[in-house]
Image (tube, rainbow, N blue to C red; front, side):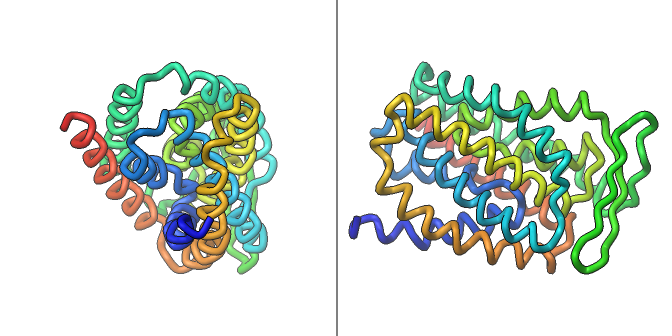
Length: 272
């Protein structure tokens, strides 16, 4: 275990930034594991990442709970939709060759980055109108900030099913997909989207981790997971605190830049 201590500060950084943007940190952790352990199979890499994402999301959710930013009704609805996809995604990972896995992950991260860069200015912190016939939500944060918005539950459930599959397949947790979807397609305020996404991530990542435990893939990554989890549990608390001091539009822009850089790096390594 002593040779894994250096992973604790790595987990702290991942937990801080992942919670800040509501992404769980898997989009940083998976590329890092790919670089550090080139001999590992995709299912081992994703099993470690999903387990760490669970601890990060759990810690972050507790912090966001105190801030009263989580939309629990929507979160439970979407989390239930992600479970079938998360199970299928975890089972599919073992059938994907490592080179193809790396290329698919890199392309997806770059695509998500481009989408965010092109659409950030359209939403930002603008006032959100209610959708006719949609599910109306009212949320009051601990500081008194009030949010009123609405969305189509059908669209939300469909998106969550896809998010559950793709995120579990790649071990990235799903926040990098879910947060943009909640903001741009379901009309969520950015800070509510990041908090609710973390709540959903905790349930989804736990589901994927249980599947990997059942298949035996997780057995090879227990020690690394423990070291990383110690760091993310602490970092997630700091990330939630910092989220109160950073405007939502900068959170999304920061996510876009990070996704693009990581995606390009993975593709370079995949083709080198």
